[in-house]
Amino acid sequence: MTLTFLDYCLLSIFYFWASSTALSLGIGYYTIYRPIMAGMAAGLILNDIQTGMMAGAVVNIIYIDFISTGGSFKGDQCLTTLMAAIASISFNLHPVEAAVAAFPFGFLGILIWKYRLRINNIFVHIYEKKYKENKAPDISLYNGLLPQLLLLVMSSAVIITAFFLMFLFNKLIDFNGINVLLYYIGVILVVFSVSNILYKIKSKYNYMIFASIFLAALIFNMKAYILFILIALGLLFITDKKVNFVKNKFTGVIKKGDLVYSWFIWMNYSHSCYSYDRLMGLAFAHSMKNIIKKLYDNKSEISETIHNHTEFFNTEPNMGTPIHGYIISLEEERKLNNKSFEDISYIKKGMMGISAGLGDSFTQAILAPLFVSMSVMLCLDKSYYLAFIPVIFLSIYILFISYSGFMNGYFQGRDSMLQRIKDVKQSKIKVYFPYIFSGILGLSMSKLLFNNIRPSENIFTLGIILFAAFLTFLRKRREQ
Image 1 (cartoon, helix red, strand yellow):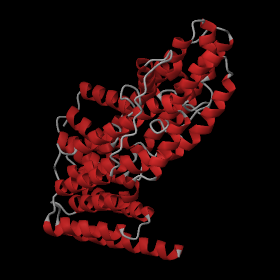
Image 2 (image 1 turned 30 degrees about the vertical axis):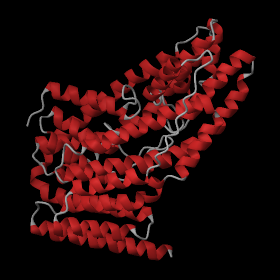
Image 3 (image 1 turned 90 degrees about the vertical axis):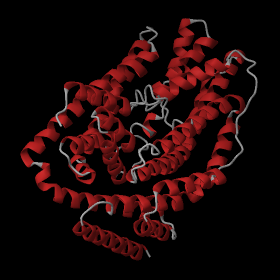
Image 4 (image 1 turned 135 degrees about the vertical axis):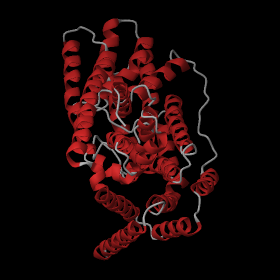
């Protein structure tokens, strides 16, 4: 298949959108950026959704332990997926083979993240310079428009380079000529990725659950949708039915619409100007812009108060929203009672670290892997339409966490953050996650590695699985 100019343009625009938090309410990182959904988008653009999703599912397993915290970035799974989908559709490669051909491009994508944080410092410095010159710089420009234009240019340059290299490598090497080698390398990557994550879980039952579901799927052809229904019912049963949502009346200057708009800005632009100097500092100030304008009439006071909130700030953008609501209520109180900003600054800095660790350990390490892996499992069993359901559930869950925290923070203040910490620590999803996740991986691996492949490849796959199990056993013995 030959890609058209329109295909290149659409893939570039999608990659920019997936790499950005803008215009996705903050859930893009958990949905369209993930390989299973990125593969679907690539397949939609290239008129082969199923092949695109299968390529994405394989890449998803290779990146199964992907967590980005505090600006760290081990590889660009979205770029890898787009290249894998292209390789599978254009070169007629098996999804496992395509994933291997595309794997090196994940390291190319790191360049965007690495240099984006450094270049974004420029926008911070320009904003600071204009503020010191009393020019009342518009925070929307320096946290929103300019960084997003930069990302568009950078992501377009990277993906065009990746397109060129992919087709150049195929011309020089001929991927179809080495497809068997690519397949075997892919099997090794997949098996060792799953083996590594099972080892990290450190539950004495996870290997038993993994092996049981793996064999059940292999011997009895257990369907993925059956396990999905069982997990969904189980999650419904163990999830706390109590919804912690405050319904107080707005009696001050700030109204519900002001909070909703502030939340909307934060969710869309929390990482728009993520920089080494301030991390989320400009994003926090951006989300406070409409609030400050509501509280103050004087232009210089507005500019000064917004600037105060550009100080260093970093937290998990969804779990940390009680901070925003609380700070808004404090700003409202400060305006009415003439208090100093220093107290608010100390509160922000004191709360952000707690919510950062709390959020990353729950949203990134529990929720995203759990729901995304269910989509992968359904896709590998060719239940392509059902594969969208877990991602939809995840999106709703993340948005609820974020929005409820924002509102509760405004009305309850510090108590809302303490309640959030308590809820996460007592979460039954967190307790049962290792067992559920192990079962999902077991069925996924069975469907991927032993469906419609040659006997010789089955033998090789079995050998790799046994070898990985042996290495895991040695690692555990060494620790003891």
